[in-house]
Image (tube, rainbow, N blue to C red; front, side, top):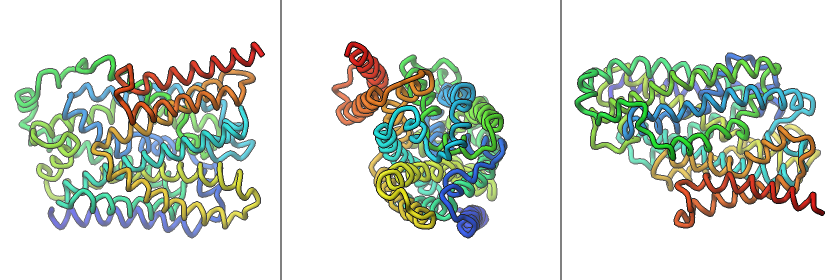
Length: 460
């Protein structure tokens, strides 16, 4: 790699770390650390939401889908558009004002308000574990970019990516995350737009794509119904149970600001990001047809782009990875601190102690995520597995909490245990799954168990 590209990448990393340490000196409470003092605008929050949701997992994973199935891979992010807009209409008006009134910082606090403390604890456990796994997927994405770019082995690349993510998040908190997400998304968008003409030229233009790709890769119908259902069932519900999203709802000034941010985020995901990512993955297949699908795009960037542009685009992908990894790491720690430590162990803990513990746990969860990154072969697998676990356990109880007047904690807890437990069991033992994907069993099972618990209660 040329020295100019290395300088661009290193300067970007140092700049991000500098922002984190700047906010380290300004923060004194968990209110600032986890929800940004509830004063942020739609522009910053909207860009932060889309940067967090798309992130490294979906950026690298989307490139892999473009490599393997073509432009139809863009439907992955269409589900993000649906989820964002549904959440803006259904979720935000119901949780924002309550969150401000009660000073909530986490998603499980909403469930405690609607159910009881046992549901809050169970939801916090599911969320914390799920997000720790999700961070592992982002770290793996960063490692694949670093490996293809610098020629490092995958394991050293994992540790390099993890070190930057953990140090930055531990120092800066949500304000640093949101403000740098704005820059990171713009860097990613500009980087991908700049990369596209160079990558297309390397692939031989449109004629080269037609000659080098299967005909189905150029069609939007090259996707199975099973695949579409899996994406819909996995990604749309995450907009209703994602701790990172609740933190950003609480961080906005008011309901109208939050809704504008969510509408903007949906449009940025699809069609803009969806077609850019999948299209670049298709070009990578033409240029590097024998590559691992998720390594093809980083290899294309490294081999085909001119000096300076290559460094910019690599920085863009690190932006995507950082913007998701830091948010999800902060979400997992927020569950542990707010929903376990302060709720059950030391409710009277002074703010400096809680803030210090939050930073220590950020380091600990980050190290656990490294183990996930070194054990999963594909980024998209790690991302969708984490999503499926959280959605299977939490979505149905959340829907009931939003729509019903007097839901009961026993029904919600039963649904969480049934859905989350089934997702884990069927992923460990896939031969037991009677349907193509475990979430197709786990999510309906959660609903059925809740319904059965309700019928039993009414009979008694």
